[in-house]
Length: 144
Image 1 (cartoon, rainbow, N blue to C red):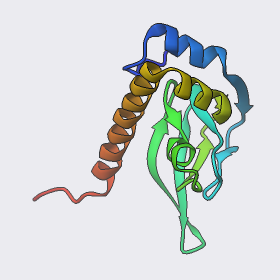
Image 2: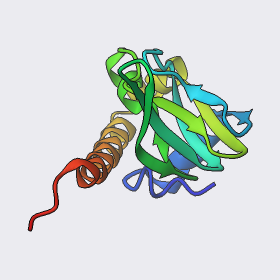
Image 3: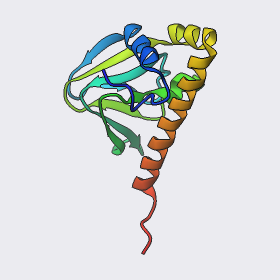
Image 4: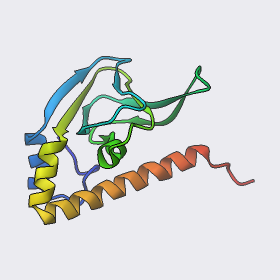
């Protein structure tokens, strides 16, 4: 599996470690992978398929505000890192496979390998920055 996009600063061996320590979960079209408000307790990586990011406004209006997300992308990273509920729903847009690395296993690696930790957090920061810029493009008005 190609994780270079999500973790460009990790070495090939470190990316292999992530895959080796992951379990694969399968989802069908329309399945909710992460529900808004849910606390994410694993690193989640899209192995195959595409996902939509949605939120419900005013108790009835469902809006898609990011995506589609595809193979190699990280999901649920904000909740994983800050321990707060997810800010949106992540829904499978067709069959999808998600790799999950339990937080306890990831934290053990992060705490025992400072070089890995530095590259992991830098990669995650770059990924979150890319996603934020993409979201801003969707909501920022276009200059005249």
